[in-house]
Length: 68
Image 1 (spheres, rainbow, N blue to C red):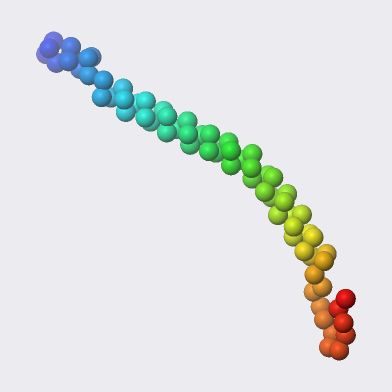
Image 2: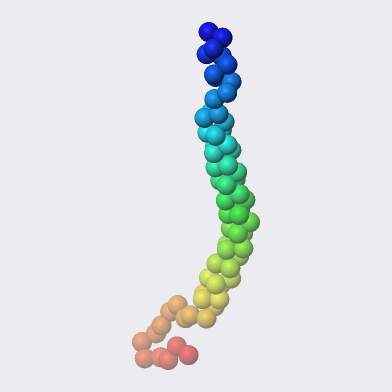
């Protein structure tokens, strides 16, 4: 039993797994932070583009008239 405990303490396979899990969690957290910081800018650009298109494109036409 003592030999098993000594071998278990020396085994580093679990430590490598923990390192990869922590690294993956950090990458996912950074991706979430990047998404939230970019999302507000993208929303404002999309709103401005929609407003510009709404104001510049005529929405109704009458037969026989020039929509200029």
